[in-house]
Image 1 (cartoon, rainbow, N blue to C red):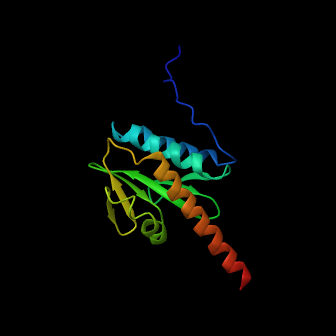
Image 2: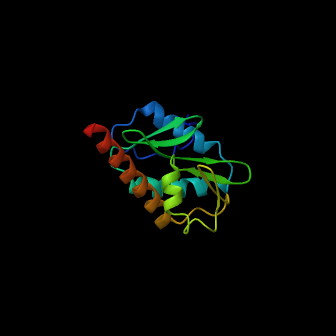
Length: 142
């Protein structure tokens, strides 16, 4: 009498709220292929560069990675996927490496079947984290 589908277990990182984890899992489960696999690949690369207690949540309807504020967000659309680094600084800093992707305002777009390179993603996340900690530092001095 076992009819429940095998749930893919999402490894919980840190003490994220389980409702957040569920919402993120739901977001991915609704994505068609190849967007789902592409975004999962992106998500894994982002998490590998994030601090251990980073929280994944759904913000503005899309998966968002937070650690003392929003780090980056990702989303899949009909014809492309997007990375939202939440900062023009990071986009400017890596503009040369992003030149083969479509970059507009605060968004980096890439094909639904071609994830951004993991090395580039990690650089973007690390750059964003550095920027965030420097901002926090300058705030605490005033």
